[in-house]
Every structure is written in structure tokens, then in C-alpha cells.
Amino acid sequence: METNRQKKIGGVLQRDVADVIQLALREAGVQGILVSVTKVSVTTDLSIAKVYMSVFPHQEGERVLKEVNQVKSQIKHQVAQRTKNQLRRMPELSYFIDDSLEYISNIEEAVKGKEDPIHNPELLEKRKKK
Image 1 (cartoon, rainbow, N blue to C red):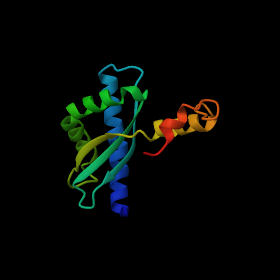
Image 2 (cartoon, one colour):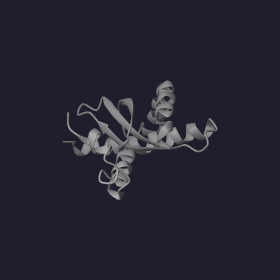
Image 3 (spheres, helix red, strand yellow):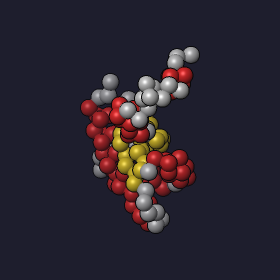
Image 4 (spheres, one colour):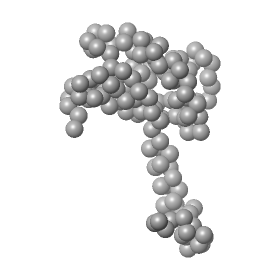
């Protein structure tokens, strides 16, 4: 379970990392891609922060993740500048794609009946447990 300190640091990092990434995308002239930081979880020793990003459209997720990892040190530096009054030591940032929104969307599609096994019996084969 996360301590209040971890949650507080995660919240600060979440806001600042999101700002830095969105600014970088604007400066690079990237159009039509929305990146939001959905969660930042910090280890108990505050040395590592896992940054979960949601990318829309989700097909661009891997490309955005690759580009973010290429400029990882610049992002860390800019975030460190913003948080220098709140954090003594800047945690190492690791980036991940948060696909929970896509997962929820797939569940909604299934509930709406687009994948109805009664009308489409071939679906039953792929749903069976192996």
C-alpha cells in the first residue's frame, strides 16, 4: 500500500511530467495525438517512479512511448527543475502505456453485443479456456 508521501510525490510528478510531455509534443509540431499521464507510482524508497501514459489514438501508443524513452533524460531534467522545491532527489522515471481505457472500451463493445456468440457461434471457440 502506498504511503501518503508516495501518493503526494506521485501526484506532483504526474502533473509535471504531463505538462513537460505535452509541451514537448507541441514544440515538435505533433498534431492529433493526445497524451495524458494517468498514474505515477513511486517506490517506497522514492528512487523509481513508474509513469503510466494514456495515448489517443491508442494505435500511436508504441511510437509515443519510443519517442518519450529517447528523450527520457531531458524530461527528467525539466521535471526536476519544476519540482526542485518539493523533492530533494528526483526519482528515476520509467514509462509505460496505460491501456486500461482501451480495455474498458473493449468490454463496453462486448456488453453492447457486437461479439454475441448466439448470433456468431465462431466466437465460442476463442472464448474457451485452454
